[in-house]
Image 1 (cartoon, rainbow, N blue to C red):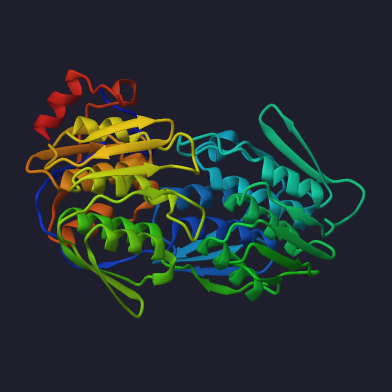
Image 2 (image 1 turned 90 degrees about the vertical axis):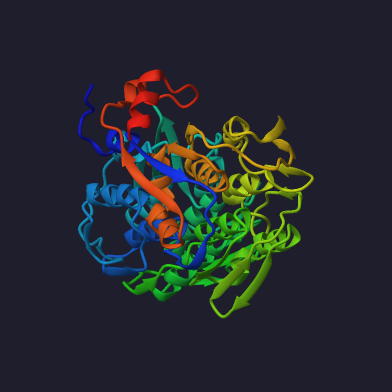
Length: 455
């Protein structure tokens, strides 16, 4: 059986072959932050002038957002890790469902399009299957700014009715939603008057957005605090901006080093973006050294520690799965509680198949550390669970084959190459006779097993 030659099917036929029990040594160059670059691309819609983004990572999610902007009429030119964005001639139209379905960040465009053009129409977003992630906070905030919004056949249609511009307002979010905070900041930047967002999210990616918008002429105060103030301006201009380093990528490599009792350095990184993670790594036995924009770790015997995910500056939900992989081989019992997304424990059953001892109730995992895991052939179900499986596989004596790279490539740039440069035995392989029709996440059939043995 031969798959059609499209990118999604191609990625689903790929896997990482991992020979475990390698010690990691060396330095890892950290890429630009995916979650920041995506929202900065959306923010480029706010100006007619060219915007230049540096340090943009090569990821499938970035490609998807680029295709969304091109569909609107944006001109994009890329060079190395730089994107030159020209949003002067945009055609306001409903974005095709197939473009936005796989990328939740596509919805961020609604705030920029609405405030610049007075209308926007975007299908409900998609992304990893880790929970409902409702857009109520986005919609309620835009309505407070004066937008009329209806949802018709899973398409969000927003427009201005009484005024030619959005009007500043006091908005209090029911929860500190990152996406809603970003959407409302963009919308308010060209609104008339002052907007105050209370209970705002404080993540570094929001701070990066505000820094770029202020370069473009916006007047945004107190980003990184629970109350953000935006004084609307008449027009925004172009700018050049460098995307911040990806704290989640850096955290993933640090956790991998801790799991394999290794010593590595990650750079460049902004250390205070990872303070909660570094504290837990130290508590679990690793030695952490911070020097300028680099973080070094020396792994040691792993001690069990409890974590509970929380909005920044708490422990990031995006590192919950990788940290759980570390705790599976820790000495003692640990507890991991997920408070952000209700379906972000997809990796528990997969880690248990590798020999871990995890019991799950609601969104709390109780983990009894084991001495070792075993290599397996498994399929990652979302972006961060795929990273967790790879970390687990690095600790085993056996060979593992990890599928689900269509998830992994959404958020990690050259992940296996960077691991190989640290001395691991990780290679990307393609199994030609595996198609989406027989690609199963919970039970890989015999055809797939045979193909992978030959890979």
